[in-house]
Image (cartoon, rainbow, N blue to C red):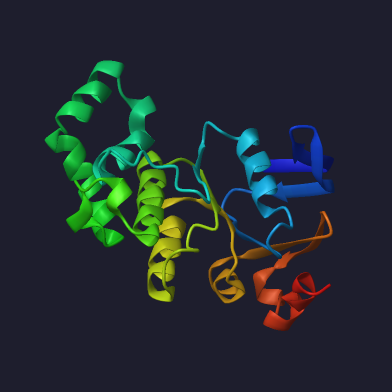
Amino acid sequence: MFRFDNEAIGYQGVTILNGISLDIKAGEKVALVGESGAGKSTLLMALQSRNRTNSAFIPQNPGLVRTLSVFHNIYMGSLSQHSTFYNLLNLIWPQKKEIALISPIVEKLGLIDKLFDRSGELSGGQQQRTAVCRALLQGGEAVLGDEPVSAVDNHQSRIIIQALCDSFETVVLAMHDVELALEYSTRIIGIKNAKIALDAPTNSLLRSDLDFLYTA
């Protein structure tokens, strides 16, 4: 689904990662790990640029419209599936069909009581869960998530990651929690010194095998 062959990756003319060779196949559950600033977000954005049509993206900043409700922010994940008229209709008067479609998603992530609250009134964790719900509604063959559980507790983290793994065939998540990365992924990619320093099946790794990614 995603492939790089000895490529330099960056943005605005600045190279962040060098010599990136990577092949992610359909069905893989991949965790990107490494220190903050190592380049995980840059790699995710590059992956998204290779397959925008069939992949949902969860940014580190939820990117919600604060004046709109949770429902409307989640509905945005399906804008391309409807006509402009229908989208405007839902903005003014949410349709029962769309409410019925979105309600089970928000209920799973514990937001059903916030469905018509303005997103700007939510906590950071609730905003993050709203962004995850938007990706779940959007659907696709793959989901790319940039620290999608950084603002929620351990229990909610597991609910979110499991929902993503159940809903998408291919999952690629940048993660700060190494224990969760080892628990839910089938493959770990570690980034250090602007390169891929580790790429191995999760079942072949111990927690201690990742320690070098976080030391000078």
